[in-house]
Structures are given as C-alpha cells and as structure tokens.
Image (cartoon, rainbow, N blue to C red):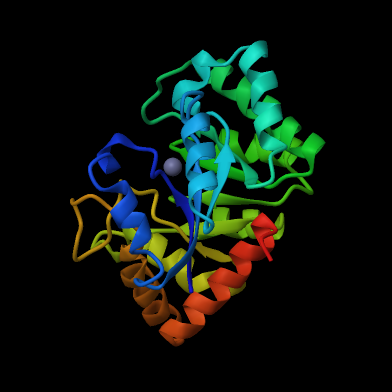
Length: 254
Ligand SMILES: [Zn+2]
C-alpha cells in the first residue's frame, strides 16, 4: 500500500474534516503516513495524531523558517518526544534561503544541533532544503554522514541527487513531479534507482495534477506513483511496493 513519508495533517486546513479524511485512507490505498512536525507547537499535534490513528507515525523537529523559537528548554523537550515509540524521525530540519525567515547562521546552528541529536538517538532525519543546495550539502557531509534520512521534496539537480544517494539518503518525490514544468525532477526520477525514492505529499501543499492548486492529501499519491511508473517504465504496483519497502526501512516500521 501507499506510504506517505511526509504529511502535515496537523495543519489548520484539515480542521473541518481531518478525521473523516484520515479514516478514508485505507480505502484509498494509503497504508501508512508519517506526519512531520515543523515548529514547537506542532509536536503535541503530531503526538495526538499518532495516538489516535494506528497507521500514523510522527516526526518531530523544527523547520528552518521557525528555528528562532528554539532554545535549550524546548530542545530538551524535543529530545524527550523523540524517544516516544511512534515518533520515528527527526524532522523536518534543514535550510531555507527562499523564504529566508531566519538568518543563515541561526538556521545552520539549529540544523546542526538537530542532526547531532539524531545521531545521539540513532534516528533518521527528514531534510528540508530550498535554494540552499551548497550549504546543505556542506553541512550534511560534515554532520550527517552515516545517518539515515530523506531529502524531502527534492528540488535540486541529478548530480546533487546522486551525491545524497551515495551517502545512503533517499530522495522524496511528491506532486511537483506531475507538473508540466518539472523537467529537472522528472530527470532525477529517471536517473535515480527506485530503491532510493520515496513517495510524499507535504500536504496540504503541492497537490499533483489533476488536483494542482487544491488542498493536497495522501489520496493524491496515486497520481505521483503513476507518474513515477511512467518515467521509470515500470508498473504502478512496483512503484507503490518498492517505495513502501524503502519507507519502512528508513523509518524502521516493520
Ligand atoms: Zn513539510
């Protein structure tokens, strides 16, 4: 079944129908979801979701846009939450020079601290990197070698994807791959082995064609998997099966 490796069902866009939507997942072919935390307030919501739904797992971390709210006190709290059974990864963490919400120095500092925390706890990482290819790779080479993880919503070149795959990382592919103007990501999907790809929505954002622009949900991953199957010239079933296997291995959900 489909494994959504990166979702945000804690987002207020799901307030109206969250339960009905999540209860329709199994029927829609979605077997497992990892809900990523993005700021300090999201951690409790992630815990609530994982407690309520057997098939929902969580990740906790602080997105580069929000690292200004981190301090030693809530960082200690993060460590506690990461020890909980259904919290399977540190994330999302990284660098975002597109929104540039926080200074690059502060982003780097907390990115490195969260990578070190993942190493200490022996946990995989979910990396967010936008318009920050060179700095991300530099930090990853120094602080993230030997860790397991995914470069989520991958938006860089094939060469960069190969670097990460060489380090043992997975490449997260979502709705963007179905966009007409996504030649670069399509090329990445063609060149990188299926064994290194993961399905993800980043919902409520980035809905694939034919639902582009609407609120996204894991049910739309059918379109992403179909596009990947077409690009790699394999069956839809093989894409779903292999990416699920990859995700289970990464998050250690057996
Ligand atoms: Zn995200």
